[in-house]
Amino acid sequence: MDLVYFIVLVGVLIFVHESGHFMWAKLFGVRVLRFSLGFGPRIAGFTRAGTEYVIAALPLGGYVRMLGENPHDEVPSEEVGASFNAQPLWRRIIIVCAGPAMNLAFPVLLYFVVFLGTTTLAPAIVGDVFPGQPADGKLIPGDRIMAVDGQTVETFQDLTRVVSPQPGRTLRFTIERNGEVLERAITPTRKHLERPLDLSEDVGRIGISSSQPLSVIAVSDPQGPAQSADLRTFDWVISASGKPTERFTDLERTLDRNRGSLIPLTVLRPERVAGPLGNVLGVSVYTPRVATLTPEPGDADGLARAGLESAELYISHVLQDSPEARAGLLVADRIVTLDGEPVRHYTQFLEQLEAGRGDEHELVVRRQGKAVTLRYRLEHQSGTNEYGQAYDRYAVGVRRWLPTLPQADIENPSPVSYALRESFRATGEVLELTATSILRLMQGRLSMKSIGGPLTIFDAAGEAARGGALNYLFLMGFISINLGLINLLPIPMLDGGHLLFFTVELLSRRPLSVRFREYASIAGLTILIMLMVFAFKNDIERQWPQIMHRVSGE
Image (cartoon, rainbow, N blue to C red; front, top):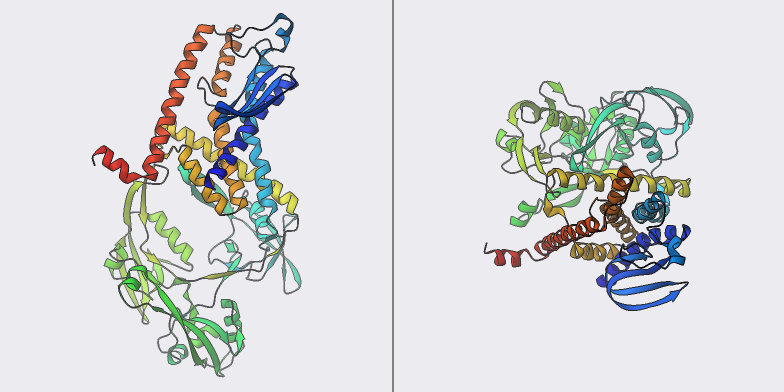
């Protein structure tokens, strides 16, 4: 079946490409002699209106042959006006550009179909507010954002689309809270995002998420009620007083209402699987337990009266042999300050580490009620990523465990406009990534090992098809964009090579000589053959590296 998926994918893209040349040639009155899908011997075909339509044996390309396209073609005098070379230069440029243009436009249709299947989206409801971020103190979990600067907002994606392009600009948020409509002025902070291939962008963020933390607890007071109830850090409370506690806020409300009476709790406790496999993979199982918690009486915060807090800033895992492990950081340590600054959120902790990179850090943690000061530097790593680019980074050797629960999705309020908008966005992103990849190859900043050939496409087509029709369509769009851009490269034998000849003709006001074009075509064909051989070699190395090692004698 993988062969069928491969032939369909390549065949469709070739048909789309050649249809661009064909339609514009017909529109300008140029006679098309042959429309071929594939190269080599003819398998099937028919002739209609003077054009031969052919399916050939090798499905790795195709072509549209027009009257007079080859300088050596003999064109009857009565058909000179229908020959390609007799057309004005602007018409020839359009005909040549039409093929790549179809490949670049086709993904919009494919991605439209893909995104049309998105029937539900996350609502514009605040799940969590990050401390120290612009929304802190202005929005709270559960707020429904109705509009931003007068623009109606229904989904979290709508919210991101409005806020992202406006870092540093104060926005007016209209929210609904407990049935009351309120307004809040919030200024998104500027966040720098690193993307593949050395691309980056600055976006606006207000510091909220659509998901809320689950009710995973940490014992903050070693002498408090939670410790006495035999609760442990990283216990997951799934019910309190007989009611489910899906989110941490559910547990907070239960504790806030309590004034010192007993609360039965059901918790799931993570316990590491014993043995070598459990130690290596870090596998844990969750065992149910029952506890009875009696918070201290009073009107203070319920969590504090119970001796509990969120596990947000508690270390759940320390990588073996990492600088953090060598500095003495332990599981269940609670992060307090980093380089003298109080840490209120794990994301803030990571951002501060990233900003400091190779600097020595002073980390203060709370361990069994006592402050412990540690000093260490992040582990420096360098190497080559999957794009063949060298990277230089600093790795964080600790993890935290705080799963989240998203808000219940709502029905997509405008599926057609959503699909259309997202199809253009996705096409633009893939176009930018592909164009940048080609540029990085030319600059020598991207390894030639990243070039893939037919075997890579064969594997990708089969894998995408097994993942579902939408995955297959998305891959088809990705390869279509690659095909369109590659065909625009100024290499003779490609459409970009023809455009290069036309540009010279436009500047010199006369066509290039037949002999020069023939030599250029031979050079272009040589380059293409070399690229195909190189791509095929990369394919073989990916598929059968052990064979290549034996052949090379390594």
